[in-house]
Image 1: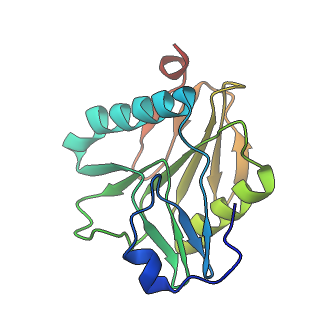
Image 2 (image 1 turned 90 degrees about the vertical axis):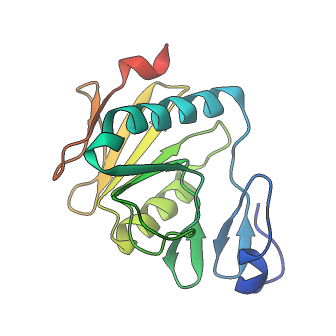
Length: 168
């Protein structure tokens, strides 16, 4: 749900929302979070990436603000950067953003989020749906495509996450 009146950027940046909200061109957009299934999957994805890739130089974050444009801030469920970004709000594109769907999520809103990440320069966006047990990868070159191999993967560098471990 978006606000009906414009909120100044400074107000958004100085306000702690619980849960945190996206900021899109002066409006606050609530994120669909809080369900057990969503929370558990977010923990599994973040833990997997941290356990397997921190030693390779990745930093992994959950629900960190990412400034995708000067007037838009998104909060991916999980994201990973190569190295320590050195900033509290990410202004440089993460290597990977992960969105975990909730039953209330709408494809039209998801597509806008993915485009925001890709246009910022995020090379990889993973979308995971715990209800259907489907996962997709989106890149600027190939768009959104469902993963049929059972492994979400990036290239250059390679990051792999088997899907089977997420559903149990």
